[in-house]
Length: 217
Image 1 (cartoon, helix red, strand yellow):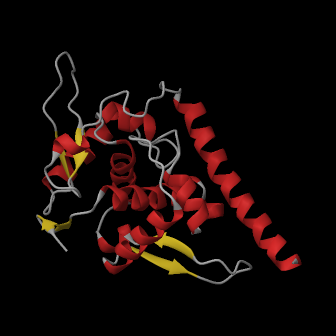
Image 2 (cartoon, rainbow, N blue to C red):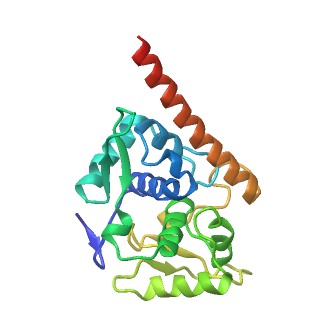
C-alpha cells in the first residue's frame, strides 16, 4: 500500500465508498452498518456528491474488499437480516475526533471546500459552534503529523481558502472539480440533505422487502 506522509493513498472508488460509510454512520444510523445495495445507492447519490458517479454493485464489492485489506472497513453480521453489512474503521485507524472525521468525510464526498462551505454542509454530521471553530480544526488537521488536509491557493476574488484531503496525495488537479462537475444545479442545503436521507432510506426499505420476498418464496 502506498503512503504519503504515512497516510494510505486511496483510489477515487475507495474514497467514495469510505466517505459514504462515514457519512451514513452519522446521518442515517438506523440503516447502518450498510448492505451492498444501500451503500451503492449512497455512493451514487446525485446530491451531496462531487463528482456524481454511477457505480455498480460489483465495483462497490471490489472496493470494499480493497478497503478491508487496508483495515479501513469491516463486516457486521447478526440481527434479523442475513445480508452482510459493512462499517468503516476510520476513527479506529486514525486518532481523530468525531468533528474531524466529519470534516474529512465531507472532503471525501464533495471535494475541496472552504471553511464556510464545510460549516454549511456539516450540520447533519456535526454541529460546529461557528466558522472559527471549523477554521481552527482545519488548521490543526493540516499541521498534524501526518497532515490530513492541505489548503489550496485562493481563487481570484475568493476570500477563503479551500481545503482538500491528503488521502489521494498532493494531486490537487484530480480533486479540484469545477462547480458544475455534477451536471446539476446547486440545491439548498436543507432540501439537499433531506433528498439524500430519503434516497438512503428508500434503498434500505427495498432491501427489507426483497429479503421478505425471498423468505416467502
